[in-house]
Image (tube, rainbow, N blue to C red; front, side, top):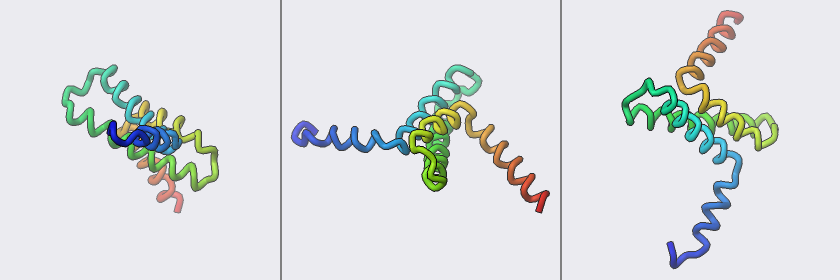
Length: 104
């Protein structure tokens, strides 16, 4: 990388995108939440929990963009997803879909 000085500039430009900022926020918050709870001992499960939260944040960011909401909302969505965790998000979505199916 020292021979390509613009590499760090390109990385910083990519990370300045709210889409990636939200995903990074979700990963960091979920890692901190799992470590704080200290209920999960498997490093593998902690790693995958964080990655799934980051992926869910990318999905939420795409939805935010599609709804024409402010892109900076992606960071808040990422933090919220990381704080709630994969299990809570799954339960919320399952309940929401169950209500929609029952109403139809």
